[in-house]
Amino acid sequence: MESTLEKLKILADGAKYDVSCSSSGVGRRNTGKIGSSAAAGICHSWSADGRCISLLKILFTNKCVYDCEYCVNRRTADVARASFEPKELARLTIEFYRRNYIEGLFLSSAVEVSPDYTAERIMSCIRLLRNEYGFGGYIHAKIIPGVSPEILHQIGLLADRLSVNIELPTKESLNLLAPQKKPKNIFAPMKQITQTLTERKQLKGAGTMFKNQDIYSAGNLSYLEPEGENISTGDGSLVDLTGRPLAAPEKGRSRKERFAPAGQTTQMIIGASPESDRQIVKTSENLYRTFKMKRVYFSAYIPVSNSPLLPTPFTAPPLAREHRLYQADWLLRFYGFTADEILDEKTPFLDLELDPKISWALRNIDKFPMEINKVSLDELLRIPGVGTTSALRIVRQRRLSAIQFDDLKKIGVVVKRARYFITCCGKYCGGPDIAPDYIKNEMLAAECIRNRLLPIDDNVQLSMFNPVANQWGTVANRPDPIRNLHGQRTVSHG
Image (cartoon, rainbow, N blue to C red; front, side, top):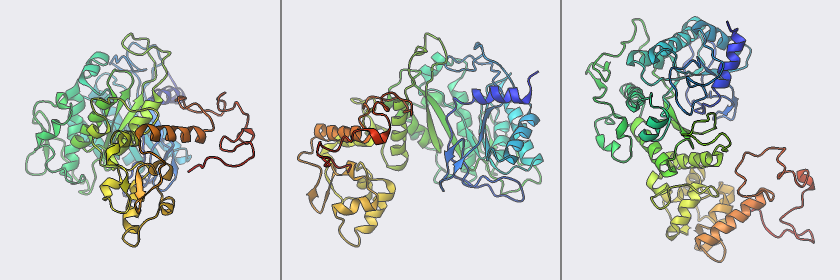
């Protein structure tokens, strides 16, 4: 029988492929309990105030009844197996907290016996932490598709954030690589979480979400929709998809008790199936629109299987593609872009050399240059190098006086990008031509100089032992690519 330490090694290692981690952005009211979820996050993430946050990221069990092709813990995989007891994991978590190793818990799991069996044990563990140990810190709980609504509701009252993994971008890929996982079983808990949050008035403008079925027409999530919907009975209680009432609040429970105050997230695997970036971005857009997701995470597929349905074990994980998808996701959430603007039928994949905002600008060069002193806030957000903060500063500043080109860097604009797409008081500082090919070449050349002659197509994670990065020895000993033979600077960092 494994010791707790042996289980910790096995189950912490099994959880490393789950990437849906971020700062919670929420504070749980602390009434005499230990721990705090204020500005807390996950696994060496960064909180809003700049702190690095640690969290115990672990599986409850890796004994799985499913045989998903892409999963390291699939039923037929030859790996060491272990399961925690609820009290064992609760005690381990609180001891880690008391030693200042962690600030919270990220708890995922394989499916042991059945979804309800596993979820009940997860619920028992979290309940012990909250009630017996008085832990008030951050808890992120993974919801297993197929779990009963009653158990999901109880976990939501205990955890700060919930997540249900969509796994793959399309129904066809899910049927091929994970035939035991049914789309409607993934969709139903997402929908229940969203509706419960809506009923508790914790999501803005979500009151008509499920009354308007047009939200499904923009993307390909209709295959997930189960028969029937969760509905309200009129007295504030909820019934599930089958008409059974959801668990009523326990007697004596505070009315102000919150359900998943940090909302819900999801995750999909990238590179295990043949979907284009356009399909992935459109699916993400629909998840945000339909379920009011806090985040959609992308996990570059790491070959862990010899299945003929998957890339070979020698295939490098598509890390650059994952990075570009996160940038596209940022445009969806904060910059007012739609999936059809980011990628169209003629351009189904993101450019790995340039970020999606620059790629969009080059495809729509007829909209540029924009006069920085005249365009609206929405148009400012479309300019490469202008972020949400700098756009608001520009709007405030130009009420007082016209903005000159030299003012942009002080405002926070990334001038080396923005200069090709703007004019200041009618003056264009982007060079002799506004042609897309010219701008792209200039940006790639500047990026190459910034990376100190590293190859542009080197899309692997950099290492201090990278032979290319160290071909000149230390940074101090490298020749300066922006100085001529007389030591004079020939190119500006801009």
